Length: 125
Image 1 (tube, helix red, strand yellow):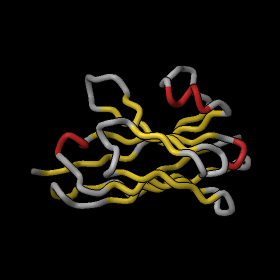
Image 2: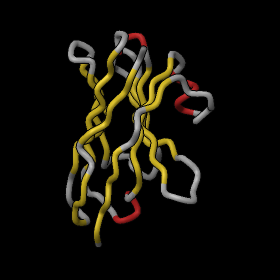
Image 3: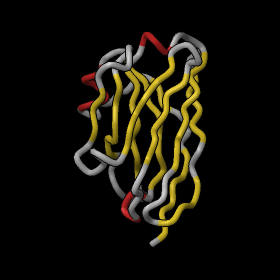
């Protein structure tokens, strides 16, 4: 059974950095496109970034482009989100997601196959 587990969230001041990690277990992460999403209570889930199976192609929401970097290490079954120049509006629960189809992630198109439990990121002003 595939499981995703996020870590690395926390409280950081505006302008600071955090690195989120997503551990993938139960299968080979190389078979899936991987993505990060975020959600603020009372709001809809928002696409943040995605990476294809090989790591060669990455995609970002306009709101994070140039500040966030998604990467993956298939040998370690890990996916990462490096977040720099954080802003208070980046505050949210961040979720790792996996699907065999990149389009599902890019379009935030449920059902997306696998989700992690989320990790809180709070950016103070």
